[in-house]
Length: 244
Image (cartoon, rainbow, N blue to C red):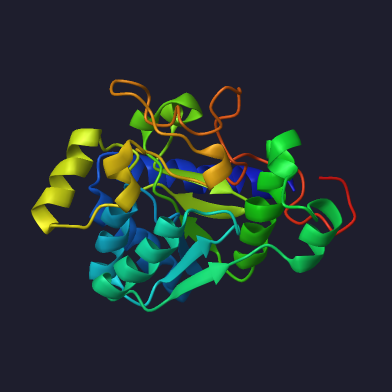
């Protein structure tokens, strides 16, 4: 086991050294070519998602794209997901939803978010993603360092849930994102115009004031900054009826 851990660490270190200064497109190409059809891009189809999705579509329009439909997303997000996937020609978008049993046991009234946001995210995002990633050897995220919080230490390549995890946009700034959107005339998420620079589920997402951290509208008023899918956890799958 110790040998496997060291070998995995060496692999991550080698890839980070190789890709530290690479462009997002170069990082994406390495990730896709390295894993072939065994890699998935996880996307919220949020305020900045169009950039990474557009890049991926230029390399492999059939790449698996995992979209976590929590059952509590804004209607605008669901519409944007359909429209953007069609426009970019992405054929492998998969809508992953929480299991009925999980909701029936732990959130029968759809109000768990009021008392325990961590548990709500676990049922509606963490468990569905863990199930969706089975069969894949690696995954790709759209996180960036400029988003703040724990993300300021983000590496280009990590290990997450026992798989290689690529963050092609880790090095990019907000100006880089905006320039790419303008250059390729990518459509914005409809809620961006209403002061939502970061968009999650409607009960836990608020608009932010100009100059505030772009993720300050997520779980506003609490210390929570991540939903849990990017947080190390002891077990990938929690059985229905188990502790959450």
